[in-house]
Amino acid sequence: MTFELAPELQRDCIELANWPLCKVLLMNDSQYPWFILVPTVPGLREIIDLDEQQQTQFWQESKQLSELLMSVFTPDKLNVAALGNMVPQLHVHHIARFEDDAAWPKPVWGVNPAKAYTEAQLAELKKALAL
Picture 1 (tube, helix red, strand yellow):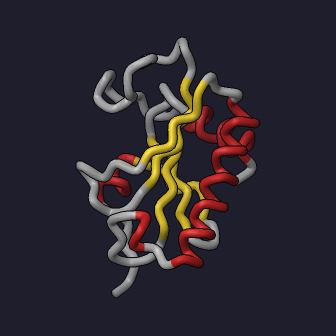
Picture 2: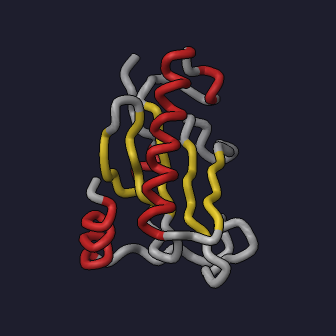
Picture 3: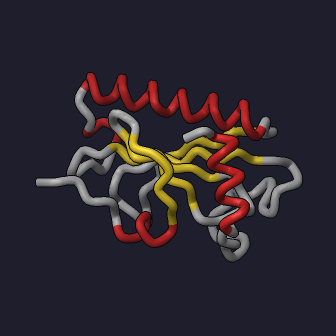
């Protein structure tokens, strides 16, 4: 069995990097700094499906992404969540939230239609993140 990114994530996200365990994705919605870690192990649905070594690696990568988002964006709150109700493949959202963002204080899902990044916005974001 080989790893394949869920079609919904392929459709809605921009792939930024491949870390030792996870793909780093950017949700293509410029209203929020919204990133997703996807472990590249086939068939995962839950974090507990990772073996102990993979779990350690996952949490290290989540911490690395979280610290990067805090440093680059200085959000009011960082939301980290693994829901999977619509996309069962294990993926963990890391969303930098601001009290003046388009959805605050509600969850970002479904509040407003997505606004895709422009090429210029994407280039600026990649430069800032150095991914």
